[in-house]
Length: 341
Image (cartoon, rainbow, N blue to C red; front, side, top):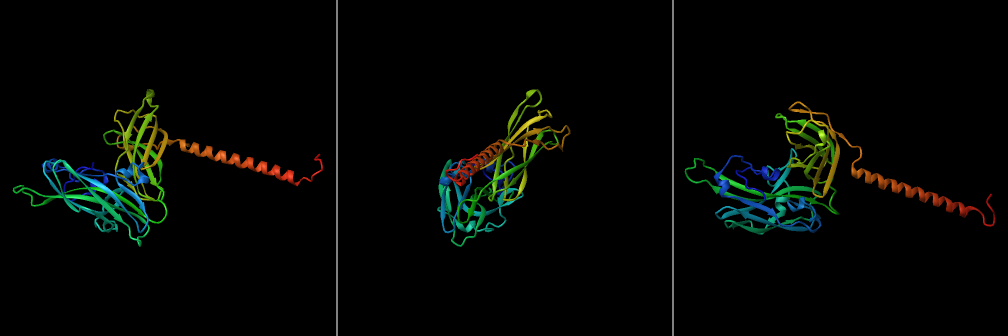
């Protein structure tokens, strides 16, 4: 469930799931709405990302529909307005576009109940339909389906403004003929460091090598440290979204009680059904607010061993086939009735 946003800014709900206004508010405690996706396409039910966001590939001239649930945890009824809008990936964050009509998604998405009332301590389901025109061009679009509640402040509050509370579900929609374009990414480097207060951290450089945007989540483990110590798992920072062909650092913050090392390190990152893992050896720098030497990554990760094994098998079978073919040709060429010396 995504928590309530305060104010007109909605970027935090899409980027990190947090609030756009960090200040405490009585209205936030009393008037809370949430939104969640209730279904995914049949071919993505094993995709964790598609169970949270609308992630799909659609051919022009077709349509899809998704059920959403709007919840109200407050003690009063809330009037909710559903509103689709465009989104962009800016500085590796998924955020609302400055113009809600920045791409075609806002005109392709319709909701069966644009305005409705959610009773106190209750929820309401709506159906969103995305219709792709036959003339739609190829490519991936980003957007969101927003649920908004506008509440006027009480007289005497000293603030002549209206609070707009919004929650939304992201939309990653790829349009084009054929199947879904591939998604993939590469972990290129691990660099250990320490924050200003001495807390150890590791920065992983990740590049999106696929053809669709990705949202990265993951975990890190440390082992074989001083006196055989082990630590983890530690979660990677959330909220990193990479457009195709772009790269960004993903930071893992560790326990401030960890010694410098050396350590064996394992990092697993995933986006939906795509998972990549790297292992290696690293040591943390002694000084605060510094980065140390990049980790020495293992030359062969487990999947590389599998690939090498498959390649060796193919080469062996090819060589065996050539030998058998040569022998068969030799027997066919030698004239019948003559003995070979």
